[in-house]
Image (cartoon, rainbow, N blue to C red; front, side, top):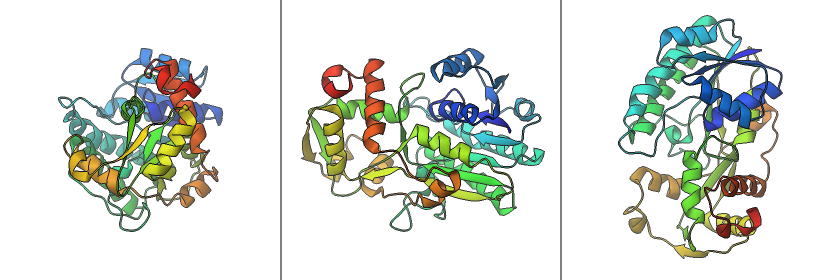
Length: 324
């Protein structure tokens, strides 16, 4: 297939680009910076097979140019930032961009069209597991609100019968990126401490970016119709996460019970709700449809991630002697 890809210079999109090439697809990547695309191709070990189209997901003309002659589309681009002064930009990009990309791809007849959403738009879940059947929750911080707007548009196209598959990943982690992605930026301070939190509920839900990318590419079959899939990965409660981190890093940290009231003083309210309320994902439909069958062991994911953080000097070796 010839596949139009957005977000190829980002963490998830870069891994999707590599998985597409490894599966034998051609890629037309819509990018704002061709030099950055070349950098991502280099660290992913990609030679031929990718054509960069200069443009933006909020520009109808360049989106249509990138979609020219494409059989399928994977929309993985989204604006996100840890800088409070930039967060509102998500509202200007993510909803409008999704409407333009998904609308143009379906109008052109791409089949399938894959939209990479986020677990946060279906949180809190209605049952004991996150499900693609859960309703959309709007509002909240600018990123979550913008992704909910994009999600509602994608679902409106599904209701019309368009062949859109929506993927809901949880915490996406793994090695290889052009910088420090959002999950890694949260993982580093967790590791650079003598203590780790233990909450009364919730935990960590992590999905390996390499598995996620391979699974998304595995869904590139035409005429399957609209689908929604959760990619929850491995769920660990706080004690389980502490045990895995200790094993992987080779350094023990004190596990400290932390009340919700104390956490709310230092962490965004929506993040606190997710930390306390996160549950496993109903992953079987995604694993079966994509051909993955199972996630790789979380120990491997964290080992590779933390080793990469040490290699790139985002994390000092003393905090993970087994990974440096």
